[in-house]
Image 1 (cartoon, one colour):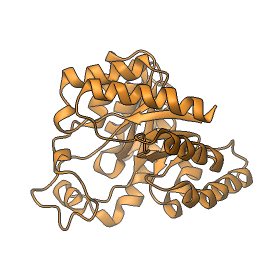
Image 2: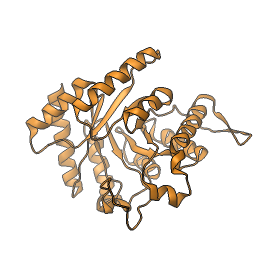
Image 3: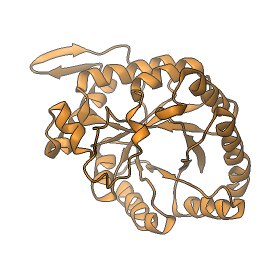
Length: 278
């Protein structure tokens, strides 16, 4: 099982100097990847904020712009969106931006995708929230066509999209009922967030069975969870439990108050958890 961590492209830690220091710490480590978030912006008041979105997340950098920047300041570590909300973005422009990140990073980009949820963002963008699933699939189709053929057809016009690096692996976020069929049809894995190992066992087994039935290679499962690092034994046990139910990459997510703090957490995840799951 691979190990990864979040990097905050929002809030007080999202300055060029702090982001560079954090990215470089991850790049020097043995971690496999770092992941970051997507929002366009938050309204002054978010309904009842049932999702618990931190107000600080309103000050967020665009994830694809941030990915281009990461390509320049790192050399080894892979990095990805968790998740890029596809209905917010036009298909052709999204495909071009993804191609560019892949080309500039040497193929280190990881594309976590999802249909989104925040009603206020859909309203502000003029996008019908009830079409978010169909719009997600539309963007995925264009991404695949661009990588496969180098030519896409939109509105009756053929267009070449080059350069044509390999399509990054696509991990579909969201609940199993919608995300697993989408991952089987157009992705390379599933990205659940916050679920305990026991809650993942059945959907991961179902994903494996459906993948075999479809004649596909096994799909990845990238699970995001805040691990109890303050209790190393408990964190190690939890990491092993994720490994044992079939998670292929475990992403530790947490806040941090400085690049030095971030580097300490990266080292702890890399050192303690890697030995625990070896």
